[in-house]
Length: 526
Ligand SMILES: Nc1nc2c(ncn2[C@@H]2O[C@H](COP(=O)(O)OP(=O)(O)OP(=O)(O)O)[C@@H](O)[C@H]2O)c(=O)[nH]1
Image (cartoon, rainbow, N blue to C red; front, side, top):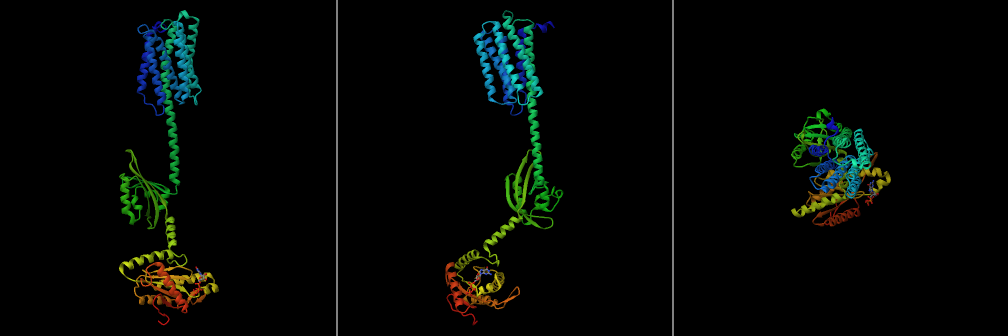
């Protein structure tokens, strides 16, 4: 007991040195959480400076006095400043605190070097500086954003230590002859033992607070993960697109409700079945190759349009977006696929394409498509040195039908006429509607004027039978102009102009007849 009350001060200083040294060793092995490194490094630095300080102070008498007193005390302030800063930085990583601690420490060092002329003044100045730093740390910890119980407790220790140091300052000022650094006695013993206890409590407190911060961060991370999981589950379950996971054998391991609906199957029947089973037969080989590339990481992303099949035999078009995923050793290679049903889009696309090239009333080719086919036919005929015929057909007095029975009847008549003309020619020929009641026919397979006349006459005669439109029995004839490639022209403009000219010849000749651009043929006689 007597040893406890009057320990040798040098021994206690040695203990303080050793205690700080051990704290450094222990802390170096501690694994801290990311983001807390700055506080952790400051604390270690604090312990290094404190160990150095106690070593220099303890060596008083064996090393130069300025080194022991000035550098030793300076190191002590810096050590406590780093330690205090570490506690503050655990929660608030702000530069202003570093500046605050630096200012107080530098002031302490300056005052000590200027005014520590007597042992008592040294004690007073040293205690005042350390006390100010620890008091500041306690206040900053208590004013933290969320002071936990542990933080308040550590701050209380700091306050107690500051109060003790304040008492020591007062004692040194009041009784300057009774105090110096190495003087033995109960007050000195109490001071140093408190400092030792404070060192232990501070170290344990810091580690616990470090752990508390890590736990809090972990709890926040877990909470965020749970929120994300809930969000992802909701997206997965309520998505309007099919979402699935497939393992490295291409077997589906997870599928959402939309996928089951899209494929006309149950989720249970999808899970465990090969993804390729869902692909339409015609695309299976290609899909297999792409799946292999994805699963072997040859490609990491895939976006394409694919035809899928359902167990009832029906098909639909889907846009597949697939990504390759590798999740450590747990699940290995995985494929994440998203399929959007684009069947309606595809149909609309087909219709749009058709509308761009076809006459909406009759379904025949329009002028653009006809022109394209005519160009092709000219190229082929030029290369093969063959001929072909172009018919220009205009209905006779069609206006009368419109005027007498209305446009609706006129439209239906045009549809019927389109049908009759189409039936007179081969599938390889092209029939187009290029104006109100004007049609053109490209006879690819006809290379003599005789044959051209035969087909043109067939078209003309196909109009001889009355058209039954609604309750009306309509008679309508047509005038046909024929141009031959290359005899009448070798360009679209020339051929069109010549067939048009021939058609007008037929109109002027009394209608219901066929006229050639360059040879005169009176059809009615045929
Ligand atoms: N019902 C209907 N009529 C159309 C359409 N496009 C044009 N027409 C009409 O078709 C008629 C074409 O008349 P024209 O070729 O000028 O003259 P026509 O009465 O046939 O007399 P000719 O050609 O001289 O024998 C006009 O009355 C146009 O308004 C259409 O899509 N539907």
